[in-house]
Amino acid sequence: MAEISRRSFLSGAAVAGAALASMGIAGCAAPQNATATSSAASAASSGSAASAAPTAAAGIPESWDAEADVIVLGAGGTGLSAACAAAEAGASVQVYDVDIKAGGTTALSGGVIQAAGTQWQKEMTDFKDDTPEKHAECYIEQAEGRADEELVKAMTARAPELMEWLASIGIKWTSVYGNHHVPYVTEGLHADRIHVYEGGGGIGEGGVLTDTEFAEAERLGVEFFFEHKAEHLICNGEAGVVGVQISSGSKTLNVKANKGVVLALGGMDRDEEMAAAFNPQLVWDLTEQTCMISEFAQGDGIRMGMEVNAALATVGGCIDFDAVTGNATNNTLPQIPCIFVNGAGNRFVCEDATYAYTIRAIFQQEKQYGAPTWMIMDKHMVDQGAAAWAADPEAAASGDFAGDLFVANTIEELAEAIEVPAVALKGTVDTWNAMAAEGADQQYGRTMEITPLDTPPFVAHRNRSANLGSLGGLKIDTNAQVIDNNGNPIPHLYAGGMNTGGWYGSYYPGSGTSLTGGLVFGHIAGESAAAAEAWA
Image 1 (cartoon, rainbow, N blue to C red):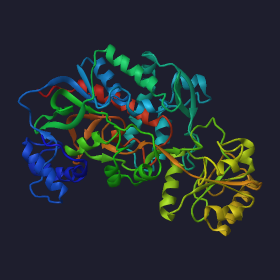
Image 2 (image 1 turned 120 degrees about the horizontal axis):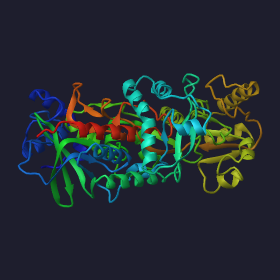
Image 3 (image 1 turned 90 degrees about the vertical axis):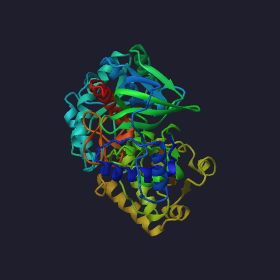
């Protein structure tokens, strides 16, 4: 089987839909030999549409190297959730992952999860009457019209049950906090829903969660194969997805999936070519900012789905936060007294809105003006000790933060230092101070630290983003079955986690969302695959 290059996968996937339509097959390739498949990829990469065929491995092999009822690709939080659910339902399960161990990007996260109406939320917060329905409405409003509402409702409805399941296998929930607000969301929909477990909550502490899931999967008899890379789905025109082509060292294995394949391979986070095609903000993160994602998150699940005519959903946007200050990541932490300004010296966003909302605006402004954006502060920030440089901003500006931090005695001097129009910056600060005197942000709806910027030293910090993943992936239904470009379910193909889309909008709605969607839809995918009728 010829290996498709990353450079040709996009155009190859694009011609796949036309080829499938010409064959009268929805969502999976008809049998093709390796030569035809390789020729299709070559034609696609050269811009030719002649005789183009899908790049998925097609047809039923003469023999299989391994088999199970359910094949799960990816051993992060989503894949482990799917594996446990399928095994609990009585299916035989094999999990394949390119890494040397389980965990994936989930293990690099804080491991927090959002849910509404749980016993822990009632015990640990003032939100005693919160519900999954309110949770769904909050997400739907934040999605700005892009989310599949039924998918969001399915996610929030199953989230409390997921929390109970995790508690039953050893996770101990210890606290619950909330995101920062989004100005246009209906009052009363925001609530403290972010659940933290013992040993979790900080970057890299998601491993507690994945270690617990992995132990449970092993207890249930799930087989794991590490250093095995999924390459292509194996399809048959009548049966649908029947297996996976997997490479291990110099060997290529054909692995049979009697009931279903679950894609849980993460987003397109590390693939610059895929980012260039679908996600400009991710390109910005990969080329100019900081990426904190597993090196194995190369969009392979999305690529393999596209090869068999899978549709995409809510592609674009990122899980981005302030890399230095952590601004607006947690509603229990002090908010920095500041305003944000663009390259023209103008304010442009609600600074205390949840972090990915503000970073989206920062990205847009920086690309629009071709210049950095800045956090403007004064002595109130120094007195509060709100940032790493607060104790001695002058020393920081000439030391570790040189080029990103500037200190001045006047707003005009600060404007000169950061190369923005002095008149504009002075006008922006004066407008802010007038609103602060009245105690209300009438421009952007800020609610915290409406503090005047009137006491030197004045400080400007360049906004820097840290990326925790991309948004957008395969379209799925409420059974976590992958949907093709004709709106039909692809037989025996399921997906969950960040290689899927539809359950969020154009920016990340707050901490814990990715694990909620990952583990919930992973669980649903595992259940659905286990319940499917075997294809042979």
